[in-house]
Amino acid sequence: MGDPDRPPPAGCAAEHAHPGDHASQHPDDGRTARDSGAEGVPILAEDPVPMHHPVATGPARHGAALAHGVEAVTDAATRLLHDLVRDQRERAALHDVACADLWGDLEAVIGGKLLRPRLVAAAYLGSGGADLEAAAHVAAAHELLHTAMVVHDDVLDHDEVRRGRPNVAGRTRARLAAHGVPRAVHDQQAGAAALLAGDAALAQAFGLLATGAVPGDVLPELIRLLADGVATTVMGELLDVRGALAAPSDVDAVLVAELKTAVYSFRVPLETGAVLAGAPGAVRTVLADVGTALGVAYQLVDDELGTVGDPVLTGKSVLSDLREGKRTELLRRAYAMADDAGCAVLDEHVGRAELDEAGAAAVREVMVSSGALDAVRELARATGQRARELAVDGVPEPLGGYLVGVVDDLVGRGH
Image 1 (cartoon, one colour):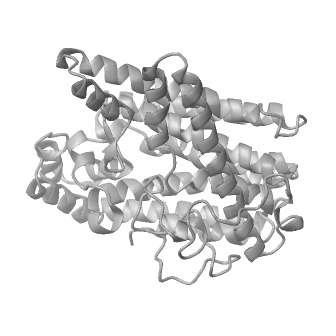
Image 2: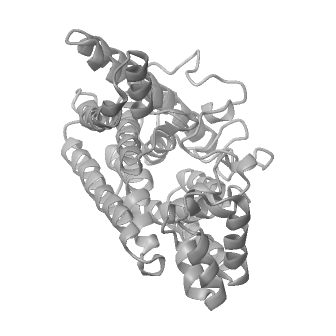
């Protein structure tokens, strides 16, 4: 997500990557070589750290060691996920092929940039943790939780494609068509499969914490954190869906970003890593605040790139959000800051399913001329700077420097 030509962020050796590397891709897009931790290294390293051995014989006290440890934990978490899906698919096949297909469809959408497992690993190792097996289980739980969230999010949005490939509903629809099932039932069957697949992933995310790999003294707090994260995300999703019933100027898009994105994608992974490592309460609190600020800044930038970004660099459409009439902070400020003529342009084009590039360009012109784009960019910069300052002032090294690099990559992507 960051510019590959940039020098490595503070606290990280040049040969290792941050969760935010590659500005040209969304955090949930397919991984690249640098995403695995080193140029040319496959996603699953050929010389993985053994599951039952501490990382690098002890806590990661230096930037390079922390970066290496993060990749070792992430690779171990990836193997855990592959094993879990294989086992669940084999178990499901004993009952019916359709049950096995459900897990096969989930496997197709699991993975990507693995941002959340990396944040868990960084917070854990950077707080003095050294148990790779425990960290990998918590990291894998976060990735499976994320999978459940995106599967359910696609149901809410009636989407059947993710990262350019059919998602659970899309794959289900294709199988139904191939088997000659009447089209009249495709919508119901595809939607039901996606809903159930998300439920299955959510359940197994918590199941990963119950395997015995996670120390019992911290297990209740970890379960509480993940459960609270899910509940908070549900509130954010609900506000996002209900926002369609309100005028763009009446929707608190920043609150939605915090509840829907920042908490489960940034705050909770950092908190759970710290709790697992037994970090002091003060460090845990700062990490939670870093995660919240970073998550909001990330979403502000993401929404900007979905309207005025370069699709070649970001891989994101600059028409879909406008066609949907997505209630973003950029759209809210455009309505608040534009004159009557500008608001009329927004009314004419935003939310129109057949919106073309000419209409989108007219909307962007209003966003620029009204000052809304600059205002949102400044808000994202200031929010990201808040996360950066919290990491510098309140998080011990090398974790503080690692997180500064994550902030710089994610908030600066696409620019």
